Length: 155
Image 1: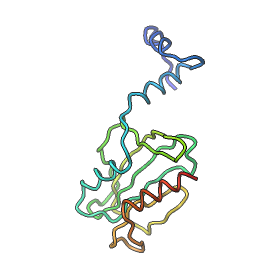
Image 2: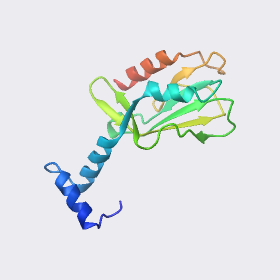
Image 3: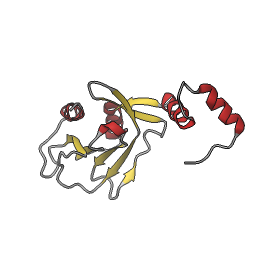
């Protein structure tokens, strides 16, 4: 981690510190407080507007949600030949994820890719949408996919 050497900045951070917080804790908390929260449904809906046809959408994540994982929303479409980042939401946005007991705000990225293989539900990947034309996959409505993801992280 980069060391902070600006004395004025260190003083300002110390003034914002809660009891028993380190400078790193203060920085993390401050960044979290300034993030714009967005729901998974909003992100997916915005991503779907970018394409005429989407075969599937898969949410890639860590198997364990206790360590604030980074999420990747993968859009499978024939409208792109290679994997490309979709700059729909900047780094100041965080995805709201609720597991029934706690509410988490997680960093995320959205990518589109042209290569689609069989869409499989795994510990680290959750299909949240599949079109009827997607190969070797049963159709999944966005509503059903979001509900499945919610149920999956609640355990």
